[in-house]
Length: 171
Image 1 (cartoon, rainbow, N blue to C red):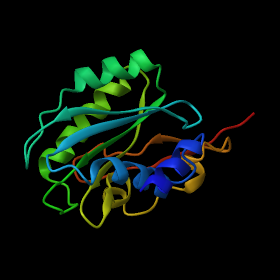
Image 2 (cartoon, rainbow, N blue to C red; image 1 turned 45 degrees about the horizontal axis):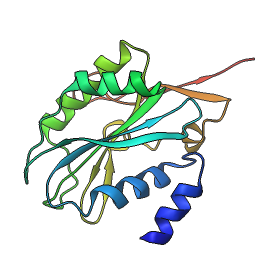
Image 3 (cartoon, rainbow, N blue to C red; image 1 turned 90 degrees about the horizontal axis):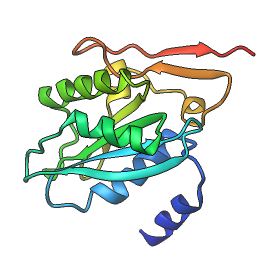
């Protein structure tokens, strides 16, 4: 655990979706209560801050989107990765998880902060909303902040449908 933490601390940016999953699993998997965390990143997907913003019970956490927006603005974050754990071990999203993701995404969109993904950390797996609901993996170059591609939307616009739009940046 210490070795992974040190490797992640030495890494200036998240250059793959797997690195993000490993980092969040390291912090959220050991918790016996449900916790909702936000990984705040800059425009190059370098970690600004990981904060466990809301703490709950064994099976529920109350999340306040307004507080996430306030913190994103305070940190001058360009994007966020939402995450929470399921102490039960099952890494499957509930309908409430899907609705919460949409609500937080809409709130952050108003202040030009992108939601890159929402991850659920279970005992043996980390589920990605972007992968589960879109049906395909996000290109690793997106997480690396490659200049030739930019994600404009990763999370669902409709409840059970997601649209991943990758645009070529010119210039």
